[in-house]
Image (cartoon, rainbow, N blue to C red; front, top):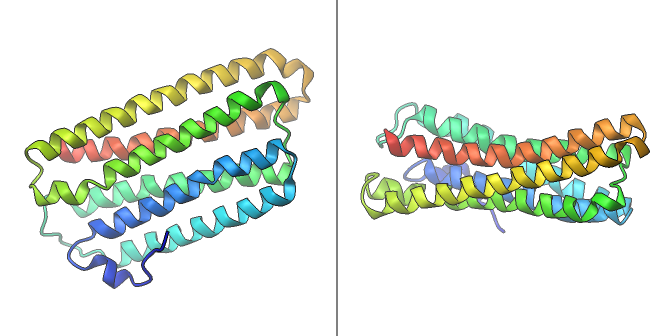
Length: 226
C-alpha cells in the first residue's frame, strides 16, 4: 500500500482523508501480528525480529501522520463534525498501532514460548483481533460518504450496520480470549510463574487491540447521534 508523502495534499478539502489514511496504516501494522506470532510459534526468532522491525516502521509512520494531522488540522471545521471528535478517533486509532508494537516487543524481548496446547487457539485469537481492526477501518472509510450525505439517509443505516458488525466481531474476540485464558489457567502449574504472568499480559494486550478498534466504531456512532 502506498501512502501519501504530503500532508498538505492529504488535507485538500477536509481532514477526513488523512484520518482514513492513518487508519489504513494502523491496520497494516496490526495485520502483522499474525506473521509475527506464527514465527514465534515456529521458534523462528530471526523472522519474528524482522516482522517486528516492519511493525515498528509502520507504527512510526502512523505516529508521524498523527503528528502532522494534529498540526495541520484547521482550528475551525466547516463540517458537521468537530475537531475534538476527529482527534478522539485519531487517538483510538493510534492506540491500536502502539499496542501492537508493544505486545510484540515484549514477546520478542523475552523470546516467549507459546505452549503447544495453546498455539491453535492463540493464532485464531490473533486473527480474530485483526479482523476487528479491519472492520473498524471499513467503518471509518465511510466517514467521507457520511459527510457528503449530511449524516442522513441510507448511508447512516449502512454505517450503523457496519458498527453492529464491528461490535459482534469484538464479542467473538472476547469469547476467544476467555477460552484462551481458561486453557492457560488449566496448565499454568506446569509453567514458570513469571512466564505465566507475561502470557496473561500478552493475551490481555491483544484483547485490548480489539477493544480499541471497537471504541473507534463507538466514537463514529456518537457522531451519528449528534
